[in-house]
Length: 190
Image (cartoon, rainbow, N blue to C red; front, side, top):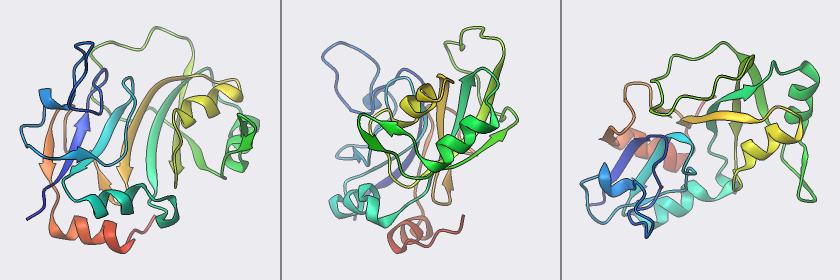
């Protein structure tokens, strides 16, 4: 029987179980052996991370052709302009290639747990909700920077219909059979 977990990764935790530098890792939170992260969140990002011991399930989730929407709440430095939102929505050039069009909108500050290391006191800041169907390394951080609004805080809130809504940083739960079927069948309504 395979294991499937949904984890709310805290800030300053690696998406691996080991680290030669002594930083906090998944082993500090997940007492389940044999599972691996299906994708990654960088050290300074927070939010939803799926873990499993089911290799085909991991491949299905990370394959961009399956277009699982990944929803992020992003706090940025400054008050984002409509022009910057339009540029992000249509795609921006990063390292010689255009990003795919993005679903993005300005939002009010979401109700989220505080971070152990608060965001430095930048004034003003704003929040956007971004939905990606594939993600490259540090893509959101690079995208907001290229339009002049650096990312200060990044939280993956959802993959498909799965969210971190009822969890606190460091908490996890097992996926239900319905959760797994929705992800495998692409049964997501967004």
